[in-house]
Length: 125
Image (cartoon, rainbow, N blue to C red; front, side, top):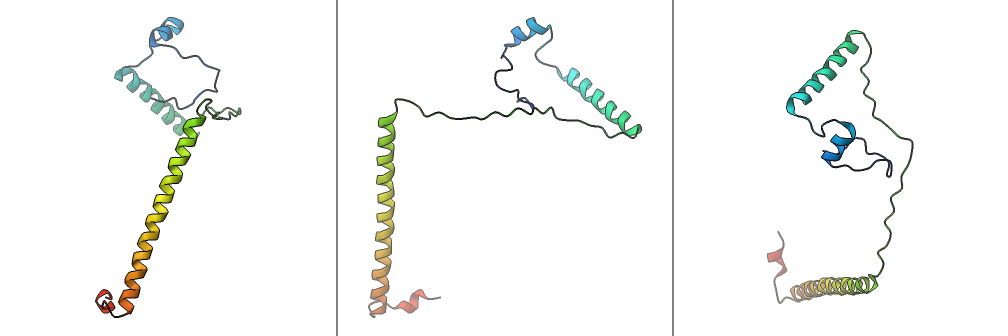
């Protein structure tokens, strides 16, 4: 599962399950029975709040800190970028010329139909 409240970078340290158990003395995972017990505790707390006329509040932990993520350009890959740009330009030229050929064929067919060589009526529906 992903953490519903990700911490700000640099404020936590990753641990293996064994390290977690050694540091806190708690298990790093839960079985189905303990999860059902936690759900029941939360449900009962909600029922008590409703009986007391208080809205059950479940606030999300929110930090005022802001993190900006910046992707730095990779160094040493200049030649690859030029080859990629050349390939992209070649593909664009191929696509435009293909469109031009199709347009030219359509124009020639239209001129031929207008001159009486082909009957235009059979294409009209």
